[in-house]
Amino acid sequence: MHEAIAEIHKTKIVAIIRVKDSSTIGLIAKCLVEAGITALEITSNTPGYLDSITQLQTKYPSIFIGAGTITNDKLAKDAISAGAHFLVTPNTSRQVLDVAKSTQTPILMGALTPTEIYQAYEWGADLIKFFPTNSVTYDYITSLTSGPFNDIPLVAVGSVDENNAKKWIESGAVCVGFGGELTSPILSAEEYITRKSRIISLIKSIS
Picture 1: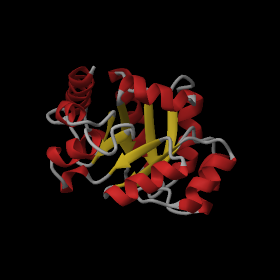
Picture 2: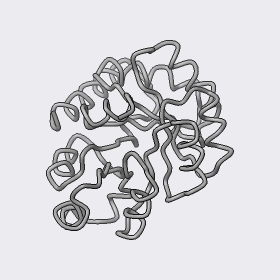
Picture 3: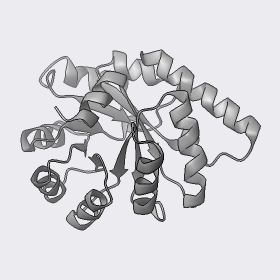
Picture 4: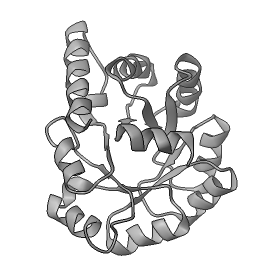
């Protein structure tokens, strides 16, 4: 198992950064790392995301930095060239998976329906990004993981926060991915403290 995937399995969490201004990423990442996050992704629709991936790897060499919203082979190749430790897709994409496998880059592949989930798993995705979780119930994921897909690792992503992360794990996800307001730009010192506290609470809830 690749080190990045092993770390995600161990900590059961991935942070997702998607912002409009790349200059805000440094402080967001600092808050995440100080709170205890060891794996995070920067989405491809964040301006300058490739440079941000490279910069964060230099600043935090012990943290696994991935690239998210990878929807085609060009984005996959660019992210890998920038040094992404893993790729994350919002959809089930064979062309992205082929690039990942050819370069031995771990991939979290997006899927929601039973057909998509099994297809991604059969192709060889390291983890299945169960997305968007906010469009389904806890019972839905439980019916999958306690039945036909009990051996398929699902990562719950979609409106995950400190109040529901534990419930997604209890329902059958092996880990969760969070973003939204928990990884939005930090505008004040007070907000930094509050944000860090919330992330620590999230981590503790699933530890």
